[in-house]
Image (tube, rainbow, N blue to C red; front, side, top):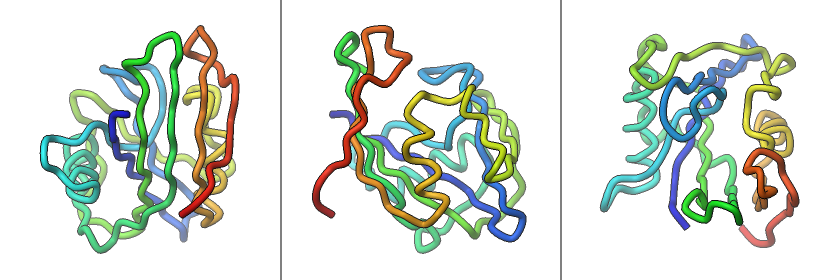
Length: 157
């Protein structure tokens, strides 16, 4: 499956998370973290730092990224969309969020997440990440590629 990265900037003192409204690409019209596919030879952390900067203007140091979740996504009706996403929390960075060609950053309170404008899997794993858990999950989508058919916990570390 296609390896991807996702970065979630968290402002714990303000109890808020920075999400990006995707204006173009695979997730257009939805809120989500900052990330995407790795470039050839790129490590997860290097890819996460690069994608965060490209999409939000924020600069992260590799040592400030904390591995937060392993998520697998299966789209039986569109197998090209299948991917493994490695999620990172980020609580320290440099710069202020800036809108990019693809993404418009926006802060949300932990208790005001825009689940209705996110992928259908987000309510299963995002609250766990915000609580400090490290979920390992697999999501199988229905033929409409919009709704989750099956959400499974994965074994192992």
